[in-house]
Length: 203
Image (cartoon, rainbow, N blue to C red; front, side):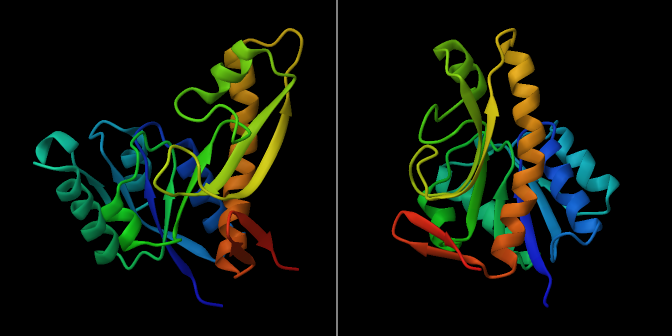
């Protein structure tokens, strides 16, 4: 089985990146992180990549005249490292047309809520403030909307009576670290079939 080259886009500490790298290193998924890209030069995700000997690239959006030009920089880094699947891991920017067209059906994201509920920023806090009894996380394909792409896999996390938003977020993060590598494995082993808005997992 061939090894799938992953490109990870991250804006922050990169804990989901680490879970992906660990799963790859342990042989749990037939993939390798080929490059990490960040819009934030201070993102710890870049340091995680460097420590693992993975190319780490950063570029500020403000350094480009247009979003299209900025995304062409991302595409260049991904193509130079022969990336097939792009994984957003705490990447805090909406993906634009340039990147979507360069990797059609090959960009996935992890979101800390049970989509379609609570899209956008701070999904855990949104859920906690709303008073839901269950929250969780979602891995989905990326489209032009805000967390609107077809859902690949979800994990449910109960909201406890004495929960704070931070406690809930921490338990959701544990599940993110579990299901993101699982979703990548399903993709890498050819088990995902996209049928309209539905993602079917083949036996």
